Structure formats: structure tokens, C-alpha cells
Length: 231
Image (cartoon, rainbow, N blue to C red; front, side, top):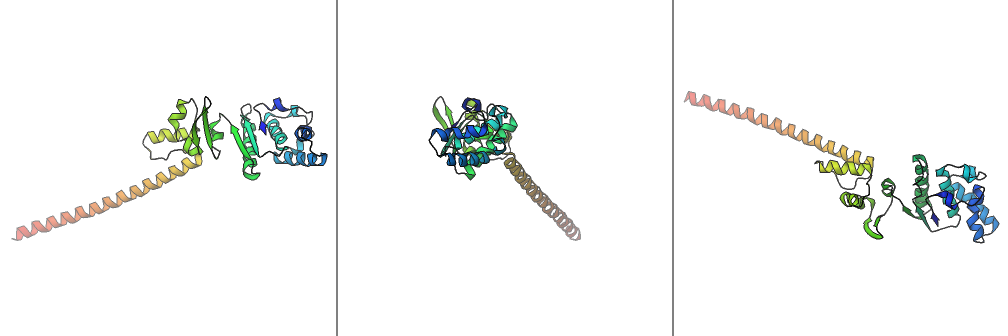
């Protein structure tokens, strides 16, 4: 099943529940089964209370979730979404991405998400970068977003935290490649602080030993001078 960038382009019914029922009706599914699928799919995308509402009265994020429900009603094994958050505000984007992740993780539906938002791509299991119809990068998000220079050359952004980590590493901090979240960066920063503290403690310990050796050496020199005088 496929969900388009603009949900209005695939809305055909006057009510939300009729919109979700449209595809299975055209597939010849029995009425009782259609009713079950409509209720189930609206519940999955958290839109049950809008079943009797007009799609035109919904927000962009809500419309996109109805569009997803209408595709789910066909029981697809694979869900393709063509920039489904491109026309949404941050709240709408968050709602849709949360729904997409739930479908993949809890309903075991394969999701192919086409997006220019790198923060969304970073949440995937596999990230593929395509330029002029050719695959140029393919791997886990950590592998792909480690290639900051290559992505910049393709005029693509990277997640802000990844770019920050990249610049910090260039400045000399020993950070790993492909940091994707603020939590990862905080963890690495904490690790660096811990390492620095251990190093500082070790230096202080060595300085104390060096000072003790210096005092011992001075004591031996004094004893040696005394022996010479007595001789």
C-alpha cells in the first residue's frame, strides 16, 4: 500500500470511516469484515473518535493518519510512504512518525519511508541514499551518517547532533563516527569526562610520587653532604 505526500490527494469520502472502508469495498471484502477492519485500523492510528468526522475538518497530521488507516484496511505486507510529513507542522510530523514506527515494531509491517528529513531517516533500520536514480550509500543509519562529507557533496543534511559531533571530532575530541542522538552524545561526553577525571587523578598520583622522590633525593643529598663534612 502507498501513502502520498498530500493526504488530500487520496481522500474520496465524506466521512473518515467511509474513507477507510473505500479500499476493502472495492476489493470485494464482506461488509462484516469491512466493519471490523475499519474499527481496527482507526484504533491503530488513534483516530477512532473521528470516525464520523469529515476529513476536511481534520489537521494535516490527522488526515495523514486516516490515509495510513485506509491503506492498512487492505492488509498490506509493505507500506510505502512518499514524504508523508513534508506538508506537516512539527506536531503533525511527530504524530505520523510515531504511528509509522508503531506499525513496523508492533504490527510487523515493512515500512519504506521516502523522506528528506534526516532526523526521520536516522530512526530507520536501513538507510538508502539515492542520487539521480542510483544508490550511492546503503547501510545502517550509523554507517550512512558517518559519511558526512559524502552527504554534503550530495547536498543533503545530516542530523544536527551528528554534524555537531563531526565538528567536535575534527576539533580534536575523540568521538566515534555516526552519533545520531543527543543521548549518544551525552553518553560519549560523560565517558570523556570520566576518562579525563581518571587521567587527572593519575597525573596527580604521579606528581605526588614525584614530589616524594624529590624529597627523598634531597634527604639523601643532605646525608651525603654530612658524611663528607665528617670525613
